Amino acid sequence: MAHLKTGPKIILIILLVVAFVFGLRKAAELGWIPTPGVMKALVPEKAALPDVKEAMVQNVDPIALPSSTSAAAPPDWP
Image (tube, rainbow, N blue to C red):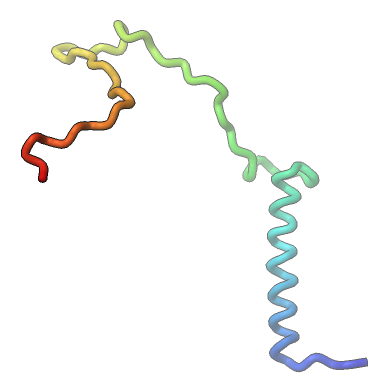
């Protein structure tokens, strides 16, 4: 049986450890192993925003959102 030298043996061990860690992480993301809630993200499906009348501040008028057209260059643009 062939014996590995020290350098390739260390590289092989490091690769195995990295593969094991990423494998556990992927398995936790897919739900194959239970996690204590650290890996799970809470993403709300819908945000409840207030009406415009309720969100208005004194002395501040609401403005329209920017349009999808690109801005034109100034007249003195070369």
